[in-house]
Amino acid sequence: MTFSQQVKKELLKTEYESSCCEKALFYGMCLFGKGFSQFEIYAHSETREIIELYAKLMKKYCNVSSTVNISPKKRSFSVTIDNPADCQKILKTFGHDSAGPLRINHSLFACDNCARAFLAGAFLACGTVSTPEKDYHLEFAVPYLNLSKSLVTLLNEEDLTPKTSVRKGYNIVYFKDSEAIEDCLYIMGAPDSMFEMMNVEIVKNIRNKANRTANCEAANIDKTVKASFVHIEAIEKIKTKKGLDYLKPDLMSIAKLRVDNPEASLSELAALSGLSRSGVNHRLAKLVEISKEL
Image 1: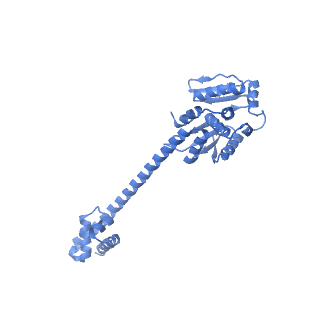
Image 2: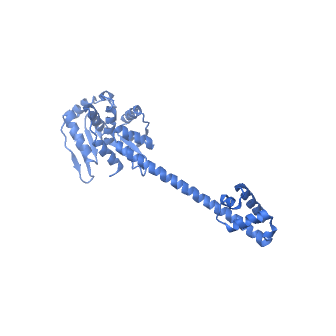
Image 3: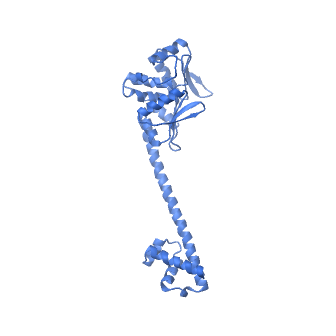
C-alpha cells in the first residue's frame, strides 16, 4: 500500500458527528471528481471503497441511485450519472446551476469543520501524496482552472499556502514543504498519517546529520593525511640533503615527532609535544620552508 492510499483509507474511516460535515465531504468528492456538469457527473478511483462511499452518499443526500462499474484491466472503479434529470438534482443539492464556471459554494459549510471535511472529499477525489521516505509532495489535480483557484482560496483560509502549476491539462494545486503537508493531512482528518510522516522526517534528519558528520570527519582525515605527507616529505628532503642535525633543536624535535606520528592531527601533535596547536603548525611550516630553500 502506498502512503497516498494509506492517507485515503484513514480519511475513509473518519466518522462525522454532524451530517453537514458528511455532506461537505461528499460535496468535495463530487465537485473534484472527473465530471460535474448538467450532462454528466462522474467519479473514478483505483480504491473501491472511495467509489462505494460515493455511491452510498449519492443515494443518501441526492436520492440518486448509481452502480459501481469495475474495470478489471485498469483495476479501477467508477460511477457515472448521465441522466439529465439526475444530474440537475445533484447540481441543485449543492446549489449549482448549469451555467458559469465551477467554484466552491461556501454557503454549504454549516459548521467550522465542514470546510475540512470538504477538503478530505476533494483529496479522495483528486489528491495524491508522495511516500515521505522518497519525497515531500502533496497535490490536488483539478480539472477546471476556476475551481483550482477556488480551492487555493479555501486552503488559504485554513492558513495553508499552496503553489500551482499545469500538467497534462490539469491544474495542480500542491505543497512541497513537509510542514505544510503535515498541516494539510491534519486538517483533512489524517492525524495518524501526519505523525508517521513526522517520524520519517525525524529519522531522515538524523541520518542526514550523521552523513554530514561522517563526510566532515572524512574530509578532516583526508586533510590531515595530505598535510602529514607534505610535512614528512619536507623532513625527508632535509634529512637526505643536510641531516636532521642541520636543524635547530626545537625544529628537530618536532620533525622527529611528526615522522613518528604520521597520522596525527595538529591538535594531537600539540598534546604530544606540549606546545600549542599554532606553535606546532608554525614549526612544521618552517620545516616545509627550509626544504623548499634546499
